[in-house]
Length: 371
Image (cartoon, rainbow, N blue to C red; front, side):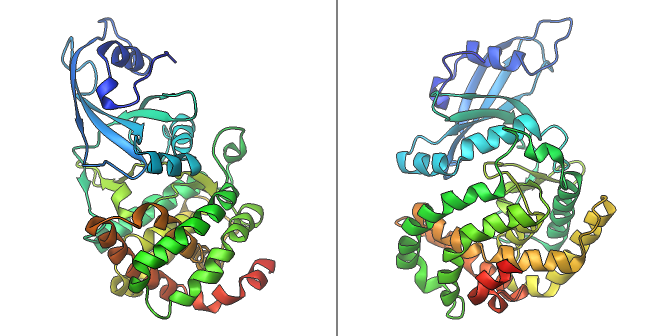
C-alpha cells in the first residue's frame, strides 16, 4: 500500500485515488485514469464510528470504472474514535473485506482497498456505493416480506461458513469470545449512563434482567466460542445495515465493523431485536426461526436441530442487556435523535425477550452455561 493516506474526505487527492483504484480494477488495453473527482459527506455524522464520504469519479473514458465510491474513514470525533478502536471496529471491517467479502452470499459492497491512515490501526476502506438500492429506516420498522428475505440471506451466509476452518485462520477474523474483555469495561461505564438517560424507557419486567445479563456477558461469549458451532457473523445485523438490490430484490448487507466468527443464532436474534416490531415478532417469529433452520439444513448444515437453535437463540438474547448498556457510552448525553433510537429499539428488545422466554434462564445463567 502507498504512504500518505488521507484521514478525511478533505485530504483525498487525485493521485491517491488513481493509485488505490488501479490496484483493484482489472486492466484493459486502454489505460484507466481518473481525471477528476468531487466528494460529499453522507449524512450529518455518517455513523457513530465512521465518517463516510461519497466520491464522484470522472474517468478518461466512460465506463472504465465506477461512477461513485464510498470512502469510510475512522471518525474524527475523539470519544467515538476511542469507542471504535476499543471495539476493534476498523480492523474487524478490513479483515472481513479482505478475507470474506468476495464470496459472501449477502453480497456486501465490492471492496476497492483499505489502508491504515495513521499507522495505529485506524483503517479506511474504499467500497462500492449502494446508492441505487432500496434502504429502510431503523425508526420505521421492516416489512415481514423484507424480514423473511433478510432471514434467508443470513441463513445462506451462515450455512456457507458453518464450522469453516477458514474462520480459525490467523488474522482472518476475531472470535466471538474476543468480545468478552471488550464488553466488561464498556458495560461498567455505559450502564450508569444508559440507566440515567433511558431507564424510564425500560419495561418494568425487563429492568431486573439487566443486572444478571450484564454480569454474565463475558461467560456467554466464551461459552459460545468454546461449546457451540461457529460461522461468519455480521455482528450488527439490523435493518439499517441491510438494503435490497434494485434489480434482484435480494438483501445486501453493509457496515461489517462488528464481524466475527461465532454463533449464527446471535445474528438472527440481533436481527429480530433491531428490525421487527414486538406485535409482529410474536406472530411471525416462530415461523421465521423455522424458515432460518430449514435454510441452514438446505445449505448443508447437519447435526443442528431446531431445538439446538432455539436454545442458542434464548441464550444469545441474554447479551442484549450488555449490548444496550454498552451503547450508553455513545447514545447517553445526546439529544432527541439518540433518545428516539432507544425509544424505538427497547420495545423490540423486550419483544425478543418475550418471544424467546429469556425470563426462564436470565436469573440462573451460571447453571445454564454449565449444562
